[in-house]
Image (cartoon, rainbow, N blue to C red; front, side, top):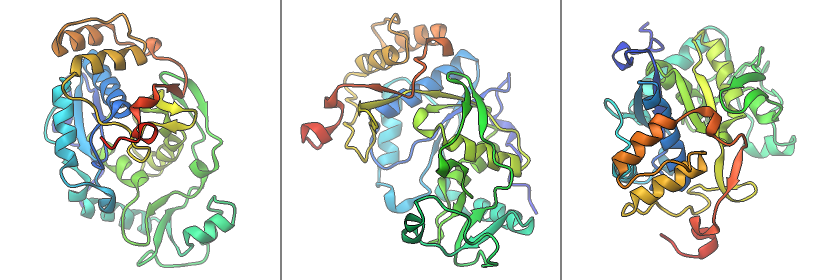
Length: 312
């Protein structure tokens, strides 16, 4: 069988660094997603590495037609030019199925018939009910049998992380009963295939990293280095997101957007009149030590139409 987990060598940079930005095309970019894109871009460019773009459109019912083009338009308006072709997860379904078939042959996965309602009734965390039930993976949800869970890792910004969040430590869902592959599966498989060596992303995914590292271990693949930046939130626990009606970026003011994002990332000293000047200065000054060591930073409520009532 073809080795779908072998990194594609053409994606390597001269020094081996490969970073990425992987948004879901469920709407236009907002300030929170600009932070993640900018931080990962600066880290790649400061290390003379490649920065690739991947559309995480695996959950097709949630995707919005044309949102991928809006995202790319916004990135380019802010000078964030990616390297190489854009990957779409929806074009890689046979790869994800091949990985599940391999894990099935290795007896690393099992079929699960539990519904969300049943799991909620059991406390909301999957307790491994179907582990030894012998259900087929065909037509059922597929879960990874996590016998040796990674519970701690070193984060380049936040330091040593010990994960205790129960959902991050359960048998990870790899494929839903409706056939849709899970984020946890596809993101790891694609990062391996694209040779990603460094991931800079929001701290809302901090606990999820434990599940990803467990999957890397089971797949016998080298995990990337992780750095988690604070997420922008309009109130404690309410991060900017499309679900929370985050306001779309104003593409007429890319310089102001970048300077606000850089101040959020601890680079308020960076100045410039053009997008190019700002990015050059930010790249020269980028370092993890400048980034606030916290999981969220409160921003103006106007960043979310949830508060203003405007549907921008």
